[in-house]
Image 1 (tube, rainbow, N blue to C red):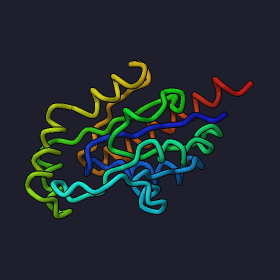
Image 2 (image 1 turned 180 degrees about the vertical axis):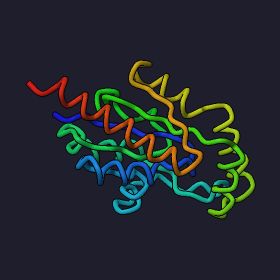
Image 3 (image 1 turned 135 degrees about the horizontal axis):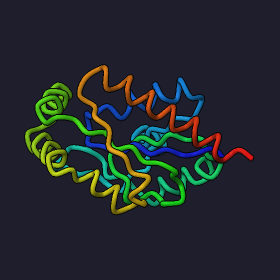
Image 4 (image 1 turned 90 degrees about the vertical axis):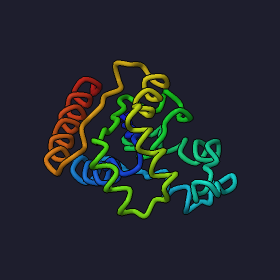
Length: 171
């Protein structure tokens, strides 16, 4: 089984860009949980305050179970506490400076409450702490995602990790 990789992070930190480029260069399968939920209507209502659907986490896990057991999957989603620990060999959390993140989210048209809450989430490293609480500390890594060079550095670092993991687990 090839390794599975998880990329949680606040919206706007670059998870999708990194995940798609990483999949393209590594040959691993890329799954964007938001897209998966949209396509399968894997929702459990709508949050009026944040103006977004509420994910049905159990249905998402059921939907992903077979692909995850095969391995070789990059999973892109902003949270991670509901995914089974057995699915992932490594977890990368992207971190973005607040001023950079604010501009990215404002460009997306986030309402003030959603914008403020996501910036606070990043300030307090909520998703990094969630990842540390959900998986073994040694598999959780935080990567910077502020400028284009960070993207290339992160891709190269993760590709090296994948290469080493494959070497260590192919026998």
